[in-house]
Length: 128
Image (cartoon, rainbow, N blue to C red):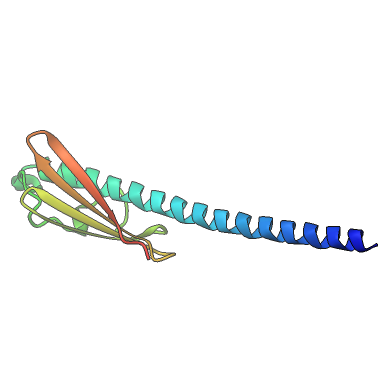
C-alpha cells in the first residue's frame, strides 16, 4: 500500500509540472503571436510611408522626404486597432514607427532609413 501511495504522489507531481510547463509555453506563444501581429502592422505602415515618400509634394506626398508624415498618411490600417496603437514620425530620409500592443505591454520600434540601395529597417523590442 505504501508503494502505491508513493506512486500516486509521484504521478500527481509529474502531471502538475507538465501542466505548469504547458501553461508557460502557451503564454509565451501568445506573446510571440501578438508581437508578430504588431510587426505586420508596422510593415504595412512602412509600406504606406514608402508611397508617401515617393509621391510628389504637389499631390500630397513627401517629395522624397519623410518630413511632415503623420498617422493621417497611413491608409492600409487604422493607427489604433485590436493589435495596438501606432505613431509615425519622420524626417528627411528616416522614418520611425512605434507600435505599442494593447496587451502584455509589448512595444516594438521600427526605424526605416532610405538610401541609394533602398530602404533598410531596424527593429527594437522594448517589451516589459
